[in-house]
Image 1 (cartoon, rainbow, N blue to C red):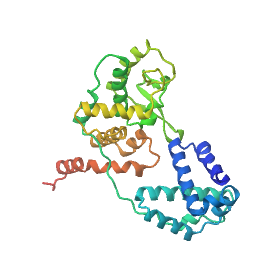
Image 2 (cartoon, rainbow, N blue to C red):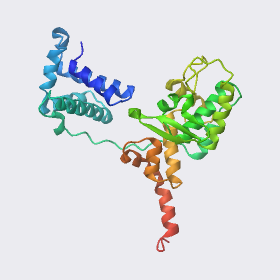
Image 3 (cartoon, helix red, strand yellow):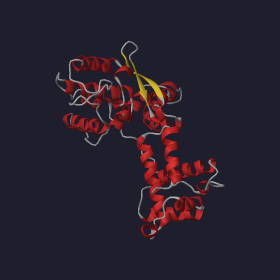
Image 4 (cartoon, one colour):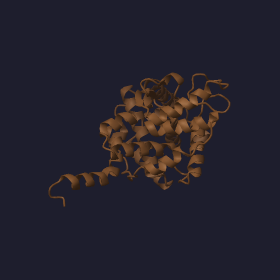
Length: 306
């Protein structure tokens, strides 16, 4: 039986904070891993679940946490994984402190390891053109794939947001899509003319198809809502057909969208809104790609540049 405190926290982040199912699963796995560390090798014999584990969680000290970090280091976890686990524990103990279950948050004194800054991978505009031209045919699935790729690149939305689109989320007159992002926050994403044309062609054929999930915008061959895994498989297929790196993901198109927008002079805050980022600092990772453009602007504008 899992810890009642952990169950209460997971219910809180899922139903009150409206975190995504992926984040909820990560939180659950991280706390289960930490609980196993606290229980030690004798866990199976003593079965320290329920109230016993709750009591141990309440008594956690910074020394316990440093021992946990040392254990993670010995197991050769990546810095990103360690940082995520610390963030989970920080949120968990912040919740416990608000609930009056602990006097202070023991994670406050624990430093998050410095992260290696990995720049996002993106496709050059010419490569994106080759990818978007890869789906051929006038059948339902080919037209769906063409529309799907166009919408991903046109809006920069996440793959989870794409497969979550319903029919009534598309406004053909306003040429926008209503997108439900992380934390169930909604935003409006403009759809470019190429995306609208691709959607029109797909929806015309979809209207005559056998559909089991009438609400879903993008459906599979059985008429049910398309899932994220299928989108990734389709993208890999078209990347190969276009002669591009098959390791690119739907998120690569999101990076490509943001990069193209900033290189063409879009305001950083506008890109933040379009991507659905809560914090501007998350969007700022894309500014590295604008360095060459800024240099060109500087050389063209500054009287002492040349």
